[in-house]
Image (tube, rainbow, N blue to C red; front, side, top):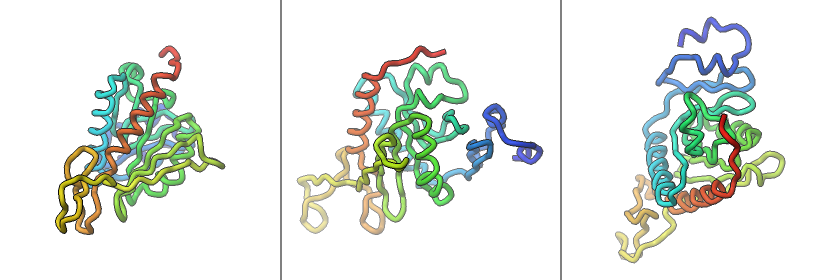
Amino acid sequence: MSCLRGHVGPWTLADVLALPEDPAQRVELVGGQLMMSPAHGLPHQRASHRLHNLLDQAAESAGVDVEVFEAINIIVPDGLLIPGLVLVDAAAAEQATVAVPAHDVLLVVEIASPSTRVTDRKLKPSLYAAAGIRHYWRIELDPAPRLLAGDLHAGASGVPAQRSVRPCRRRSSSPGPSGSPGRRSATGGPCRRSRSGRSRIPDAEYAYAQHRSHIAAHRRRPHAPHR
């Protein structure tokens, strides 16, 4: 992105939002400095797509006004972040153009990749907590996929309280390859397995239950009028 080289001084939110879109990299803003990461690979996109569908289904089933977005601009006190997935109040999303304020965000999800692993684990949770976003999920793909659901308001010393969720814990009555009960995903189908025999998708049942709890909290939360 050649327009970055001629910039002088700290970057502002207006500067970043004025940049042309670049599908080859993601540009975020923290403390006046740009934070850039390359486009994500297929495993990241596969996990994002599947979780997006699960959250959409949960919202539709519950009949609440929320929307799920992938990789949108979120305005936080320290600048601008682009989570992997975001659950947003639908009324706020309808009025937004290029960015959504953090106070309209109910949940952020990051999918850790080699280029973002440190920021997703250490930097971003504190930035989201400072912005008032309570619920932070992180999906780790290596060495085996797992979902960590964090409550950013419950941790001590700024460290989020997290629950590690291993995939496909429910068993079905149908026999597996060796005659033992077969393991199935929460959506009812067989678990998708990697060569190591582990499931390749996050636990859908837990994601669905967590999403329903966010929806219930959203119903109870008073809404400030949108400007």
